[in-house]
Length: 106
Image (cartoon, rainbow, N blue to C red; front, side):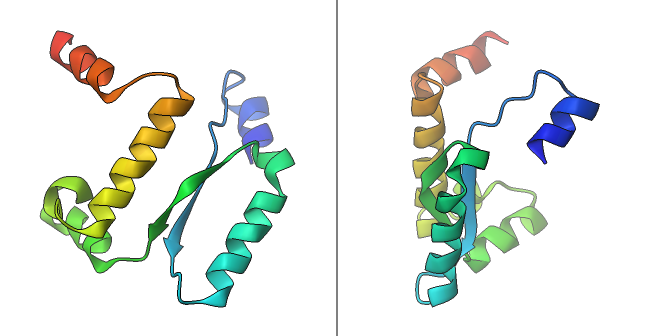
């Protein structure tokens, strides 16, 4: 998919990595799916460590017009999104503080 988009829409597109979502740890299929994605790392390049589980809070947040980290700030779903955020920022070699400063300046 990335190659097709680069060719037809955005030649500058770079894929940062893949995120496993709708993850259900109690199901064998979830771990098998994660293994399959990790096995295709040569196509994807990187698979983030954080799995986003299949929590109802994630599905409910958009109906409240809120991001999950605000709608369910004390729920494990928010923790997972913050963990993924930290991973993305690490990969981009930046910090939450730096992002907050950029938001204030704009």
